[in-house]
Length: 286
Image (cartoon, rainbow, N blue to C red; front, side):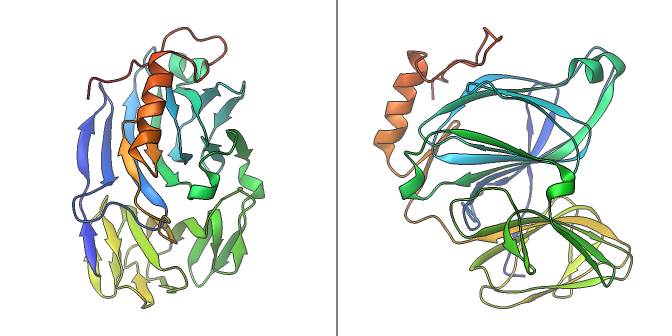
């Protein structure tokens, strides 16, 4: 493998995430500019996730769960529960506000949460589009099961499949479940690719990949993936952003001026509100 990215553990107030992107060695992979592993975390009855309303610009967020559920609410009025195998794809465009919380029923019973949170940078031509939200249920995602590997395509194009999720640049995002001894060749059709090992054992071109780490294969060359004992992995990548992208807090943009304008809109609370919610995350000092 060309590059190995190790997770940086971050405590989000009783809930731990392992951050893979952005990293010092690599700021992005294709259009993916942010990648977190959420959990796994066990919540006792009465406790859960409470990510208060906060804003985004210039990106699309995608939530993918291995276990548990989350309840999404946004300033467009969408209220959507997401469970494993389904996709919540939120395109911020000029600006959107959303919250992510544990569903009240899950909170009351106690629950476990485990999944991935990713941000995909929008190309310059799409930075000023209107915000939108799409939920795609599990039975609408294309999948194949071949030679001991089950692939589910979350977004984009790969392995002869195309996801119904509306993307704005060439990319792919897939979950791969390997049975013991299975092999898969990851082609070099996309200029940048990443392989994240969520659980189990996986070798990339003969080199072991540690759990919760992200491998970046050699550019322009197919990578051979082999799982001695079975595993779950996320495969991602695509065309890199068309120019530099600035990341500040929850904002992604092609210029610092766009970031500064978004800061002022959030300070003035003119970016929108999540219906039924009055609290929000204030703009950080830095």
